[in-house]
Length: 227
Ligand SMILES: *Cc1c(COP(=O)(O)O)cnc(C)c1O
Image 1 (cartoon, helix red, strand yellow):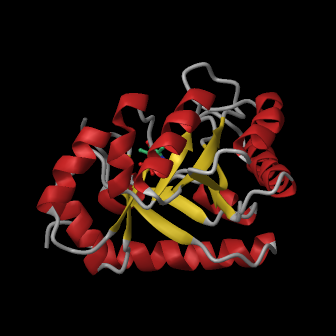
Image 2 (image 1 turned 180 degrees about the horizontal axis):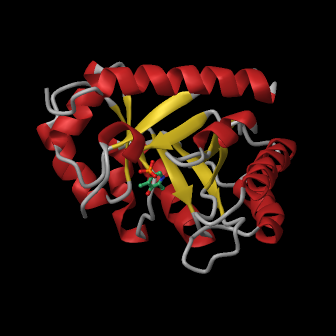
């Protein structure tokens, strides 16, 4: 077994998610996206065998290489920045979590129209104000939400955000609640935005309390990354 103890860790995380859903009171279903970046294809295979059928990668090249070596039918999620000249790679992913600019939205839309099927995306929000993180600010979101309605080649399925690593527990609650409220704005603008992708290894329980439907977990499942 390549990742010893993975099945037990998955069971533990699932129990913690169930408890967090109960505490938070949002009653949502939560999907674990197993983040396999920097690990080999065996991580995706191990995830699948442990019952995690959704796998996340943050780099397109690494993801495509891994996909070619993975023989189990996982659903691939792209969770990192996508360059506009690589939108064709979206064909291989069920969901782009990181729609982070109007220009990328236009490019993804063009690709969706060309292939005859809209691309499912989440709007990435930068709520922490950190310049190192991508995404729309809250004030950019509203006008963009209205513009995105007219882009028939993409379907805006919700919101993704990353909290600051240095945030306190109460700041994390506030950030994740803001993301939930931003999803309401997307719904009000007419988007089928039921997903909230938030929560990583260090903060997923708080994210789930605030309504997360997709948690992106790497370290807690596969151990520390050395790259
Ligand atoms: C790496 C990564 C994760 C997983 O982080 P962990 O702390 O290892 O759980 C989640 N989301 C994104 C966007 C990432 O790049």
